[in-house]
Image (cartoon, rainbow, N blue to C red; front, side, top):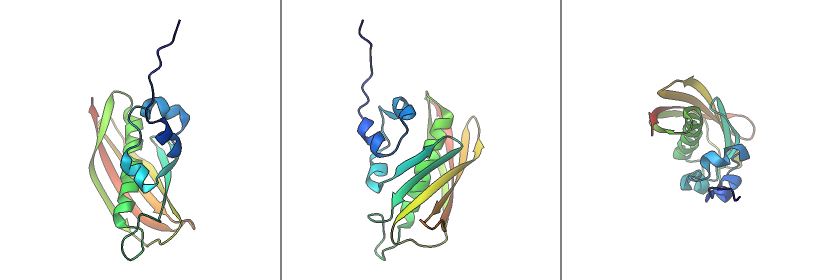
Length: 152
């Protein structure tokens, strides 16, 4: 008897982006999104309560050579949204309803790390604080993102 196996068209994208194998069935048909790939974001830990990822400064700078402020927000929104999605679970989806950030210092080289920590994981809202640091552990920015959780 042959087993019905759903193909996972985004498996290579998930592997390249550091998504743990346990989450491949959950994300395998949707991937991580073209912007995540374009920005070079690689996940290093993925749970609803704590999510981390790295992102290179190179290729994500503004004209003065600093990591673009928008890149900070892309990393923050990626982490907060994926964490909220894991919290929401299968059959539900999340949409961002608020994000804001304070930029503390610039980065011109290396990798930055984003760490999203849950502030609130509710039935209809999930809020995360995201801290972006440089390779020396210095805080570059602090963001807060709130996602609304919807039934599909």
